Image (cartoon, rainbow, N blue to C red; front, top):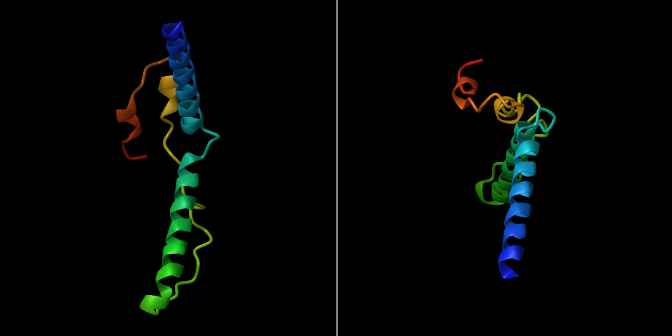
Length: 93
C-alpha cells in the first residue's frame, strides 16, 4: 500500500512541476518583468537600509521592470511539440 501512495505522490508532484514550468514560460506570465520588479524593490530596500550609515539617500526607483521585454519565448518549442531549442532563443534579437 505504501508503494501505491508513493507512486501517486510522485505523479502528482510531476504534474505540479510541469504546471509551474508552463506558467513560468508562458507568454502572458511576464516572468522577466516580475523578476525585474522584485530586483528593483530589493534595491530600494537596500538603499533605504544603508542610507543612515552611508549618508546617501537615493530616490526610490518606482519604474523597475517597466522597460524589461520579459524572458525570451522558451516555451514555444517545449510546449508546442516541436522540440526544445534554447540555442536559437539566446542569440541577439
